[in-house]
Image (cartoon, rainbow, N blue to C red; front, side, top):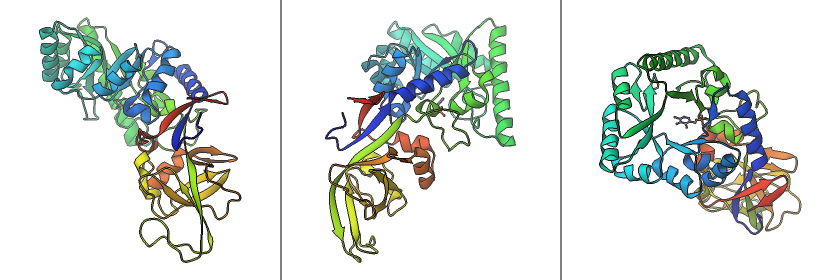
Length: 380
Ligand SMILES: *Cc1c(COP(=O)(O)O)cnc(C)c1O
């Protein structure tokens, strides 16, 4: 129960299950979900989300770091976990100890990992990243020699080759051209490896890629943001996906102020007329962007909008409740989500901050407790 909590995240597990069903219906034959649970499952809480997905039969996950992979193992996840990012040789132990699959970024890196594996008599699972044009991690698509050299390393077990698309969300001509080019290059790599007798699994798509180029999925779809029911930017059509997360906090105290009084840090936030402020128990230390200060952001209390007053503090904020009847200490203040007939979507916040939903969600901090909500009930 949320009873007594200062500030928390509520997870709608029915929405998560619904999103998984919807995504699965979009997968071509032979393709499975490999949900991206990096950065604490985009702020939602990696352990809770992963456990639910495991119950739904999801058999592979991806994360950004070996530490994140270790956390998922601790949460009881037995499925394959792919580390998408670079793991320093000083942390190769984490890969071996927790049976994580590591992304191979270049041949020399694969050789280092292979040496480690042979030295400790282990076999490390890897996926080879192929750079087809994004120019982030990966072996260049033209360097088939290096890619096949990785396949020959005895300490490594290559589970798949993959690539990442730089512009799969763009519907402009340049983006579509780059995406097609990347997919073509990736297709050629798979073909050439096939000609050498290597039949490998492959994956290429994240959320936008799956929505726009499902035919290119290969064996896994590395869906992140869409799993949580939103896209990076507000789409014209939400396609039936449901937001999983809401953020709530409390009214701590109410204060009647006269016109001209200032409140909060600094002297610049001044009451324009007599009114009432509420102190709310959440701040930028919890991941609420401070740029939402001074009326750029708002909260919902009892189904009414209360604009942020003055500067958001680390642990608290002031909101103007002059127009809201009967607010009292202990009332719930909604930062993201519904209250009565009103809703604040994560799109609204991202737009007010000039960023994408991924950033707003992933910065939601560890101080927020994650609470599971199922079919109208709340469960801790
Ligand atoms: C983060 C990430 C994903 C997931 O991206 P979304 O756009 O959130 O679906 C997939 N693949 C890689 C390599 C990533 O870094």
